[in-house]
Amino acid sequence: MSLEPKAAIYFHIMETTRPGAFDNLLNERTSATPRRSPMYNWAIAFLVMSLAAAVFALGGFDAPYDQMGAMLSPLFLGLAVVATVMGKRTRHRQ
Image (cartoon, rainbow, N blue to C red; front, top):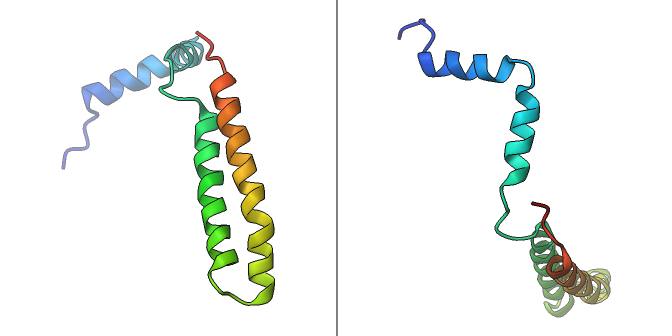
């Protein structure tokens, strides 16, 4: 294995350490339009949590777990709906 610096790595280090390089990187990252709103990620997570709570509520577990699942399942389902609606309302900056 050679210990000589690779040309591509050296170029990358030189480009990222020049003055104003971090500003350019920030502008490049924010200029790309994401495929979906980050609120959809929250909606998916809340939907999975709601399904897990429903399994506890309807799965025949002990009393504290099924009561907790019965309380949390509609809560997480409501949060999933709210996150989905907010994801549709979110406007992407360009």
